[in-house]
Length: 114
Image (cartoon, rainbow, N blue to C red; front, side, top):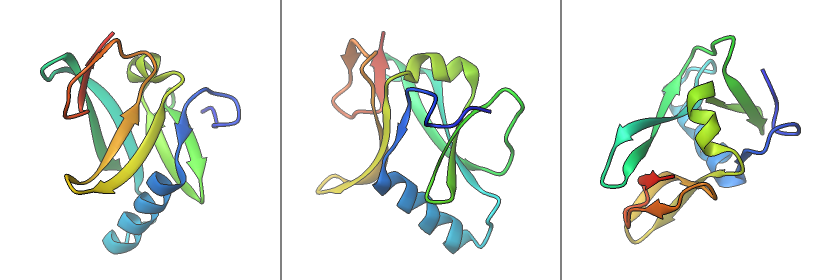
């Protein structure tokens, strides 16, 4: 496992605080935010977010405020230099990724292409 001081992937304060809030409401301190990438979406790849209790040996982890962000190695290669954030605006509330590797992004912000 690698921590955010060593790897170029950021976990924003608002995202960490939202995960902390979700963990509290689910009453399960073992939960972590898993970010992953799958094929699909209108631009080729899409981001996925889920609460997960398991950290695999090869997962990359970033810890902030006592909560953990986990990413599998395959997804991590597309997220290097990125920022996992949480926003609330007129469109709703959601986790997002600001990804400098994305050459094309969808207007919804959930899909991209390299």
